[in-house]
Image 1 (spheres, helix red, strand yellow):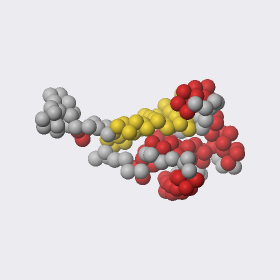
Image 2: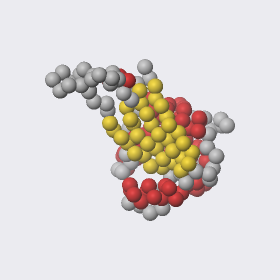
Image 3: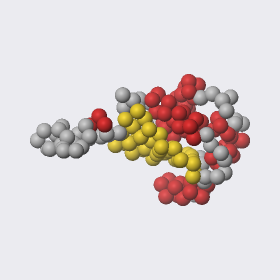
Amino acid sequence: MSLIDIYVADEQGDLPVDLARWSELCRAALVEEGVSGLAEVSLIFTGESAMAELNQQFMGKTGPTDVLSFPIDVEPEPRGRVPDAGGSGPGEPPLEEIPQLVGDIVICPSVAVRNASDHECSVEDEIALLIVHGVLHLRGWDHVEDEEAERMEARERDILARHYSSDRR
């Protein structure tokens, strides 16, 4: 059974966002990255001031950024008594019913608007890229080193080619 819940929220008023469309792209990218079974991800669209606060608090950087990812990396652990380490206690769900908490992706659409202009693409294309980029960070990808960045960008292009169409409205 594969059930990935995307909890999507629009907490900004700068740009209308198609929550259903972006939720589906996020889900598709997660599946591409091997997420299966019960899993949960939050996808939040926020304004510049909230993003600037998050960027300062978690990255030590000033000002808003386009996307931040917060992987939780918690795999459900077996529950039960220590001696048998596998039996559930009374009233606890079976292990296969405990969702994997993958993490949170926060996107700032107003920064995406500026990036789209710089990157000479549509705002929708930029948001799609940020969603896939955020998913890859949740799954452990990074782009600190040039070689990592090249691999990550290739993976982004691959996922977008399969699951995103820029002419859809």
